[in-house]
Image (cartoon, helix red, strand yellow):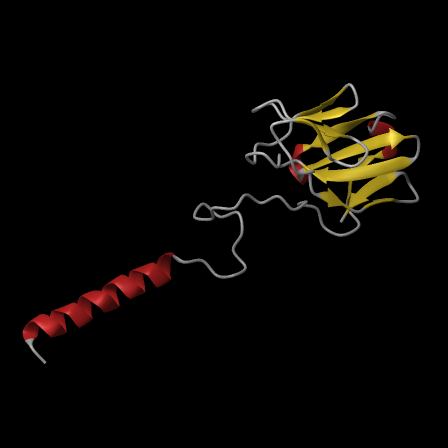
Amino acid sequence: MTRRAAMGVAAAGVVTGTVAACAGSPEDTGSPGSSAPDTEPTTTPEEAVATVDEVPVGGGIVVAGAAVVLTQPEEGGFRAFSTTCTHEGCPVDSVVDGSIRCPCHGSLFSIADGAPTEGPATEPLEEYPVTVTEDGGLVVG
């Protein structure tokens, strides 16, 4: 092997080792090197993110710490949606006049099914299952 070939093999090993060291494990999500935002609800099973009394009929609330929007389109019917707008990934920030609002480009989504009612978003918000506990808590997931 020539000296030039040996140096090339050594350099390739260094580059491979560096790339491997920078890569996270498959379980890594939401780390500084991750390109995908963490959009899953961040609560543990059976942990209520809000109570039924906090979610108005015909409206909803954004629970930023849990990355969910909780709505109550009709009395006793609760829905949970991702806070990530389907247009460009901005977080939705409020529920106003029966619509979930994204502040970045003005998309509006239905509180009943997460469907876009005003663009530029064309896809619905991701929906999560929501359960009402015996003590009136709302559990997402």
